[in-house]
Length: 425
View 1 (cartoon, helix red, strand yellow):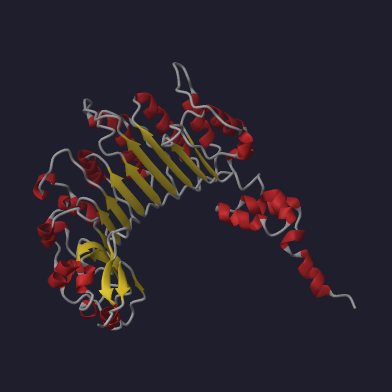
View 2 (cartoon, helix red, strand yellow):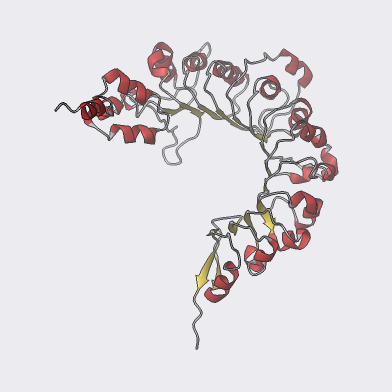
């Protein structure tokens, strides 16, 4: 008898599909690990995946790799295969050369500094316009002057033509401090407004001390945040204090849920000296759930209320960010609303707040000193550990630890201490 079911299943198997179907399937896979798994399923899949797909997902190289940008600019079919693009100037510590991640078929490329009339950087922007499937873009470099600004802005404008872009990571490190000499308002008015990045979800701007108000880069990103990121949910800011002030005054991100900011100044300041418009900013962003900060003393006490953060669930303060005395700015009502806390001195936390039934994840300092009473203060705790994972763990007697941990009904993950068996004499 003719077995209709077995023939039908055979026709629908992956290995029986024609080349163009398998090629489109591989083309749609972003993660190299998933592509590798596909390539190991059959010989036919292997021939498709290697090397035409496995090496054409992540591209990382120096800005001055003109040959690479020329290849992409003249081969749209190759350009659209990349999902991750990283422009970097990081050097290998031993060889002192830039480490590239590029298809092996392209061979080795020599780094050369651009000369007068060199338009290599503009080839980068032209190549980016063809990378339609780009999801993640990062730029790590040092300040090189106005020419680098022009190349970067041209690249950023080209990125607005990448409809799938979700993550943008910009880190510009200073060669030296730059003194502002130009009126920032006039620079801001002259900057072109970029097209919307319709799917951009995460933006990291790390430009502290590097680009002054004399350059157009802060103005460009301020314009970008004002009108070109309608879907942004995750924002990291490490910028000049005056630029941060303007950002807090001028932007409104409807779906922002995660905010990280890092404030570093040349001279120590008191909280009252910052005078940042946090209250106005927080009223426009009531959906913030995750707050990670390296400069909490810049936030006024009036802004640290439950009303300002009605949906806050995760509070992270890096170790040594501020002193114990400054923790008094947090009210009991403010802290009792969160479910995850990282960076606090736990002996102070529970003494100040008392019962915290919503708390589920806790990483902090001196947590082992509170191990025996933590079930009373946080009965629903699920995870506990130190703020610095690499710090040497403390030794706790086995019987004492078991006695303390069994009191926490929901605790499933703990780290930062070693159980020590007690030896009777």
